[in-house]
Image (cartoon, rainbow, N blue to C red; front, side):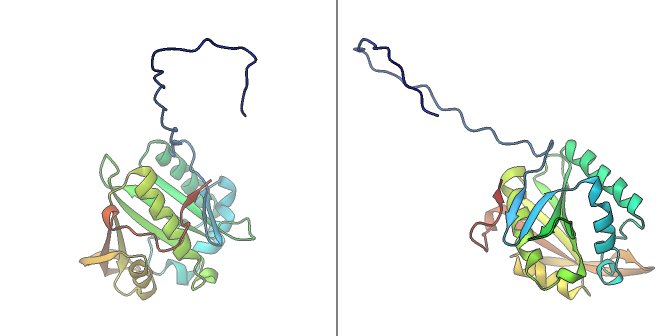
Length: 218
C-alpha cells in the first residue's frame, strides 16, 4: 500500500543517504515446513491425521521390499509423525508428505536427515505408494525437496543408499543427477539377509534443476 502526505518539506542542500535495505527474513523451517509445489504434487509437513493414509500406502509388500520396515500399525505411524516433528524442531531432520494433484491424502514421503552437526552433509530417503510408480510424481517431488535442502537448509552434499537389487530406486536416483560412488557390501539387513547397497552422491555445486519452476516455495 502506498502512502502520500499533504505536508511540504524544505529542500535539502546536502546529499541524502538512503538507509540500507534489510534482506527479507527467511522462514525458519524448524518451526514449520513451507509448502512446495512440484508439477502435479504438493509437498507439505506431515500431520497426525496422515497416519492412516501412510499406513495404507507404505506397508504393501512391493513398497517395503527394499526399505527399512515401516510402522506396522496406524498408531505406529502416528508416533512416527510425532517423532518427525520433534526432530525437525531441533533442526536435525525434515520429512515431506507427497500429496497428488486433486487429492488430499499423503501417498509417500521424502526424508532428509543431517549427517553432521551443521547439516551441510545429509542423507535422504523416500517411499511412495505403488499405485503412483511410473507417473512422474516421485521425480517432480524429489526435485522440489532436493532444491529445498540445498537452498533453504544449506545442505552441501546429499547422500542416498539403495539396494543393488532395487533397480527402480537406482534408476530414479540416476535420473535425478546423482552419482553412484561405490557399493557398500552387505550393509543393509532385510528379511534376515544382508544386501549390498549403492551409495549415491549429489553435491550442491553440481545441482541443476531438471524442470522449470521445480521447488517453488509458497
